[in-house]
Length: 354
Image (cartoon, rainbow, N blue to C red; front, side):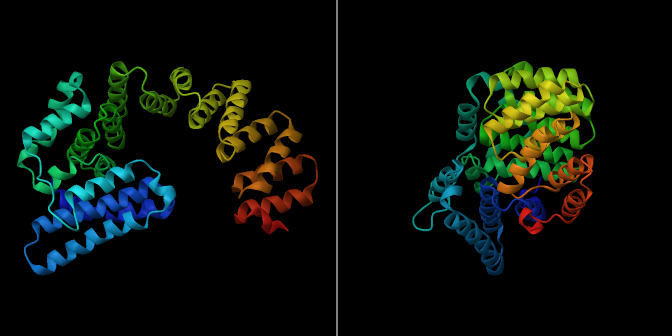
């Protein structure tokens, strides 16, 4: 894989993600890492002064992203690791530390993955090839744990481009750099799913769960596969295990509520929607799900109270207005129902109805 060329191609993909989620600190981190790695690779391969200047511009954008990050973003743990990596490997003043050789990288990867995962290490190195034969820039990046995010994102991009082998190589780098063996099965399953092989995706997740039965990310991902295949009983079993392991994760309770709903277990679904809201009172999907169930169960006053509280305190989703419109229509208050229906279609904020 020509890493520099693939990074150049994926810029629009990263820009699209940032446009849709501008405040997410992990995407800001990813944006800065992207410019540092692409800039350093370009500088390493630059054949003339113009290319060097272009590479230096990319590096400057990486530094600017790091410097301009808010305190809230910097509280995201990997910003500190990224900062430390730049001081060692992209210093503005002074000499960079030497790039590691193949032996040092293998020892580094094994230390992160754990001695019990030697077989996995050999498998991953078989995919990426001898890291000692790669340029200094990639060998340096392999020491910076935050770069796992960029490699995972690259794997996702390549999978959507139908470049399966290259996607697997990027995923292997992500696991080696991050040191989390669970990611091997997660990323592998996602690549196979994009390629249209749900059977292979499911088999990879089952293998991962066999190795790590208490991995919530694996349980959640496997449950999603079962849900897509309408195997709701199995999905519920896996999500119930996940909730036992991480009872404070509201997204797990939301997923479980939806699976219970598919199984027509309305009481259990209501309970999980409510617990998700207790954990995160601003969880709009949980509020809408609970209100919908209350409305369908004829508990219109409870549904209205929940929706009105959300409408007054937050910027509501069009579904909130739609449900309010239906509640008022059931009461034959068609004027109010029509007003909420218009708001649902226009996407206006709550204060617009005044």
